Length: 374
Image (cartoon, rainbow, N blue to C red; front, side, top):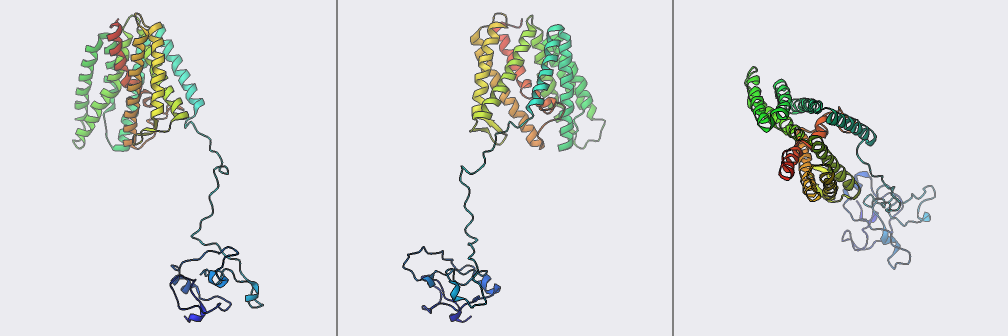
């Protein structure tokens, strides 16, 4: 291309000496434009600048050669084109005042969650204070449904076939044995359930035997064995009050973590496990649970005192949080959000048992230490 057809912007280091304004019309075609894309683009110089107007051109293939060309520089049959903004200059972002304020979402159907929670609470309280064995039946049903959800997700997502039949029968028997025979009965039932899992799986091909029975023994310990401690709480003379204290503290801890974390949460507690949990939420769980524990131990538990309730509430907040994180690890490994859809607004039964299961042995142990087995 002839040097007379274009010239470099002043100081760019390209081309020769100043050769005056370029003739009207496009200086190069599309192919040449692609070849000169690395060429720096000089922005418009404000009026009053002492640089010559002809030295403020921009090499844009879709516009005139010089950005500041005036209409009289074009032949009569041509019309000057509007200068195009450089693609390297994105449009200015709207200011924070102009951006619409996004409403903070609670992340769940609160109406359905509250309705289901109230319904479950009514069933639990009615069975707890009317006839103790009925509440044992409620625990057994929850255990069987939880085992079904857990084993179903393991098979769907990981291809692990933990035998449900021996788990369900052994799990229900474990809860009943704990209520009737105490901790000794619960341990015996746990051992027999594990043995039944090993034998039941032998009826199928050996491929995957180890992972299937390992998952089965884990499920037997995680769901029915931990739930047995709720039945152990019930065996005391003030058993219904102890179970109600256990349930209230766990629910209050979860509620405090949710409310405070949703409103004030900024610092993640365990982002790789559960991104929604925050340190502020944990503090809310501790504060709510300790306050509720002091009230429950003082007014509901025989020979209980408020300072014991403070320690109990602190322990419940810690165990409930760890239990929730533990199931979050399981669900993250399985690649699912909820264990089931049985409870609208909550997910599945296991999504409600996650913080209750590990908290049950903690409350049982502290109750025995503080006020005895009753």
